Every structure is written in C-alpha cells, then in structure tokens.
Image (cartoon, rainbow, N blue to C red; front, top):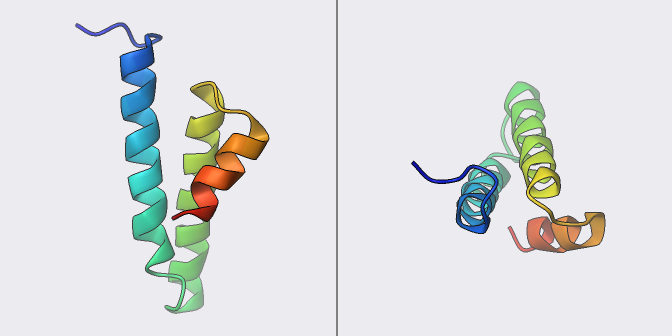
Length: 66
C-alpha cells in the first residue's frame, strides 16, 4: 500500500480534488440547489489542497485555473 502521507499520495489527492472542482464549476449555471452543492465541492477541494501541503495562495491559484 502507498504511504498516505507520501508525496505521491498527496499529489494524487490534489489531482482528484482539482478534477472535482472542475466538474463542479461546470454546474454553477444550474438551479440554486445545484450551485450550492457545486460550491461545497469546490470548498472541499480547497480543504484537500490545504491538508496535502498547499498554502492558501497556492490553493487559490490552483482552483482559479479550474
């Protein structure tokens, strides 16, 4: 099993988080309930980026590109 605290696992978690944020961004023009869920998904992606070692500025830049 891969070390969950290792760089490889953290990189994979970041990639998945950014993909989830990209998917959520496609739904921000939907009804208000879907928009709320999309914003929650982006917030969770930001949290994953933080816990995998990205600083606030880095996470913000990464999410801005989604």
